[in-house]
Length: 287
Image 1: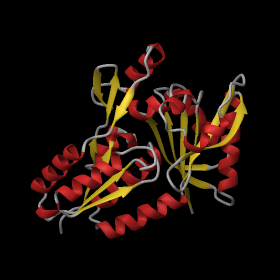
Image 2 (image 1 turned 180 degrees about the horizontal axis):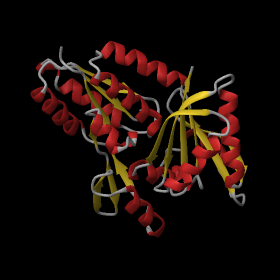
Image 3 (image 1 turned 60 degrees about the horizontal axis):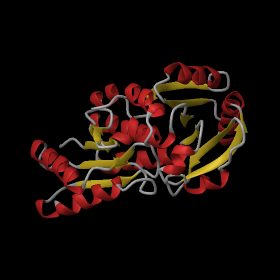
């Protein structure tokens, strides 16, 4: 039996150790500071990015891989693993053209008899990265595409996520703010709590005055979303501030039993749209 090959893009923010452990192929997006181009998480680390971002007079821009780039990735996999099915998971089509590039690449290879399935995650960062890791784990165990996709869809429907940003400036200027635009304001020390809806679009949940109160409110929201649930898998994404992520995990441990825990960087491409000081929390309930 041919092993299922898992592909994703760099906005999944999967820790490199997990990508390597499960043989997940990660295709980088591109970050531009003026005329300088950097491959996400390869040419520029999160630490370098978050140190540079506040000092930059011009906001960075981003671009997804072209259909030709994805076609080359898929063709390389087809040559290395003939007849192996490929599952390719990508950031929400409501936030980026990355998914569409992958779909076009698949169509360009139809005459070569590909076995590629392209999946719109309807999420971002480790909000779909955790699904990709689950797919990679199952693929390593020899599970086929149908079983993997069924489990991943159940994970997508059951997961809860919220993220806290210091400012809406980056989301607004990057055009990714969606339904959160109604929450723009200039009130002192307001911390917006955001999420992503079932259509893969960012929306505003609440705005809270002060980071400490915002963190406490995020935990309350999770408790409301998960009535009767005590055991959870959790991932925390941070902007190269692991101590901040650890602090949230410690707070969360006072309310839930934490099973699997992942602490990960929000990479430069996603970070260019949310800015320094962002905290993203992704929870999957455990029975």
